Amino acid sequence: MPLTVGTAGHIDHGKTWLVKALTGKDTDRLPEEQARGISIDLGYAPLELPDGRRLSLIDVPGHERFVRTMVAGASGIDLFLLVIDAGEGARPQTHEHLAILRLLGIEHGVVAVTKADAVDAETLELALEEAHELVPEAEVVAVSAKTGEGLDELRAALARAAVEHEPGDRPTRLFVDRVFTLRGIGTVATGTLWSGSIGEGDTLRAEPAGLDVRVRSVQVHDRPVDRAEAGQRVAVALPGVGRDDLHRGDALVEPGEYRPSHRVDVVLEELEEIQSGARVHVHHGTAASPARVVRAGDRYAQLRLAVPLVAARGDRVVIRDGGTLGGGVVLDPQPPRRLDAERLERIERGDVAATVSAPVREESIRRLLDGREPEGVERAGGWLYSAAWLEGLNEDIRARIARADPLDPGVPPPAEPWADAIVPLLGLERRGAKLYLPGAAASLGDRAGEAAELEARLGAEPVRVDDRRLAAYLEQQGKLVRVGDGYAVSAAAYEEAKRVLLAECEAAGSITLARFRDLTGSGRRNAQLLLERFDADGLTRRVGDARVLRRAAKA
Image 1 (tube, rainbow, N blue to C red):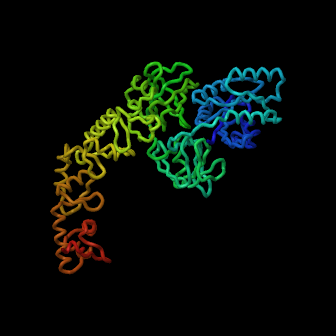
Image 2: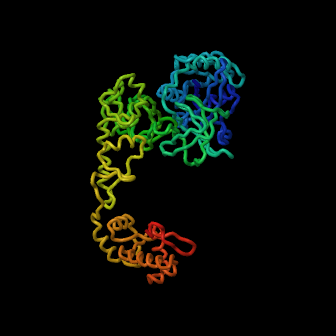
Image 3: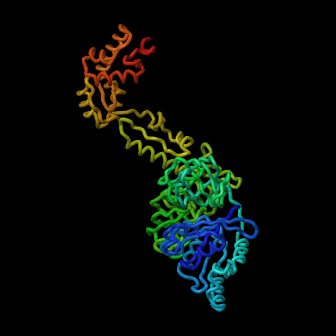
């Protein structure tokens, strides 16, 4: 499986210089980065290992102002390259970056003690000892990007740390970290492919915007590939997508497999106590969202988010407020609003019934079932869901219907991939594109007076009707006929005009606008509106400047 390594460490400890020495590529691409001599945004480069493997390397900024960017780069990496200046030792962002790596579950990596050429042997020995104490599970290598000392040893250490693992069977998900346009190609989005694969011609969905996109081409480190695999740095060309349609934090996913949510339930991992009700920023993938923490007992919390996240069970989040407060492992990415610690305990134990709330594809949790038949959940059309969730959905839709306009007391069904399987279970009637209570009929409600006033104004002269729903209802009741855009005549006037039209066409074979105007005694504009309505009703068709009856009308 392809792997991605990410740098970490305090500002000016030599991360970007080390990346350049290892890969030959300067990842500080922005003019501001070149001018200021510090990394501001994420940088990328391919890294060749001695055993022939090729890693994707992400260089992150070390300044405390850019920790949010660091988290975006670290999310999805497989191993770390922690950089510590031999002369300065561990500094504040060294510790914070290391804490973030641990919260993200990134266990494998190497520590590079940089600028080894700039200190004496005793100082270097102290720096190596401090690094060993700080990250006892990682190899520590002294290096100098200036002289090349230790670079081969560092590559070898990274090769030993690059423990490959099975990619799993989750559907495609790529978190966007850059969006730009290229002449002749259009909009390009880049990111680390968390799961699945992406190839030319694939259709993906950009979440949380809900935008369908088609992949024109795929590259991995500037090289075209037929298909990119999980763990690789990927650039995808997306025709028909504007640069402003995508942003860092968005996710390109397999359609129907991931749903954005304003709530996620997590088991907390805290660096310091996070109070219930605390206002924080939650980092997930390359996204960051303001959120409020609602705790359930000592270990669990629900994160209520201002910006929806595209999360899956087992994902890790980082929680920050100025500094890094802690993190969490997602237990339920689509939880009910009611927070229940007992339910979360059952989810953590692997209870499938507790895991399922909103509909999930049975295939997507097959690994949790382990060959067992799921108990305590409902099934419909390949979807699993809880009875409590279905009851809540039914209540929500019926509440929306109760608020609907009495002239059309229906509401659109949920625009979700599970709708075709689940909506028929709600006991509602589907008429066209809307759902209605059984036997529900349109009514005037409190608009009886408005309807009477409109009917009183109707005649042969078209009158303006701004309320389209009221006009449609009265037309269904046979009280008026709509003509043109936003006008109506009385039903009697329409029938009289129709009688005149039929008589003239039967006698003369056709009728012109001028002749119809004279016969009805109306103005040219009003005659035009009526003739266009006759065309729309299938009564007449236009031939040059005249109209003739259609065959069905003659019959």
